[in-house]
Length: 119
Image (cartoon, rainbow, N blue to C red):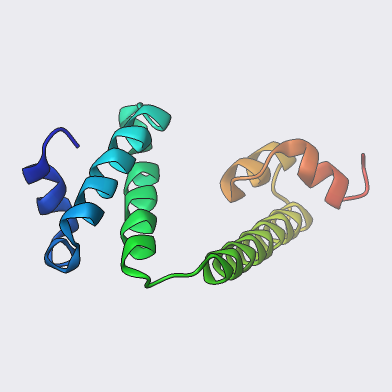
């Protein structure tokens, strides 16, 4: 974010709920976040960090809630990974090449070989 107007536009209706001090804190955090995630491909990370900043400033999310959300996201990520591995295993058992099955499911070949008991 390069200006207060940009930050206000990004924050939308939440901007009106912030005090002047909180807006200053958000601007400082936005500068830190931009340095931490400078790459254009990091936009999702910048948005997530800015959103967390606003939630913190407004008291909408506690550290405990953030921790629980992270734990749940990790659980969902693991479940999705396990499902992708199993799908690749089923593809191989149905006659697909291992490399093609791994690629189609978004996993690496070594993970597939391990799941097949070949590594």
